[in-house]
Length: 129
Image (cartoon, rainbow, N blue to C red; front, side):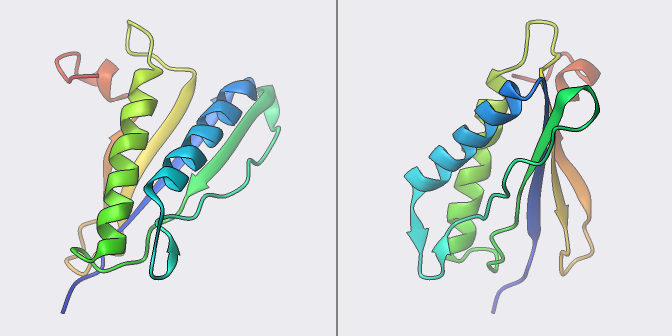
């Protein structure tokens, strides 16, 4: 047996180029990790926008796998690598041209929460970037 714990990522970039750059990186990382029995480790939406102030957004959907299964591990690897890339885009002061959040929801233990986000470095300057 296993349990379900969904993780999703929302990314918004001001001035379309940042969202496009992040989207391309997400697709690159996903494709590098490869596929499991059921296909790619995560699904990534198309870019949506432009909205007001030339903001564009996309979503990375949960892997849908039970924790500990190969597809879940691949999804975890994707999220860790993509979050590292997102954090690498931050400026020295902790701000970023990308707004993003990683959420956990649909957990069998009812643990719905924000895992990481683009404002974490400014809330806690001691947190590594």
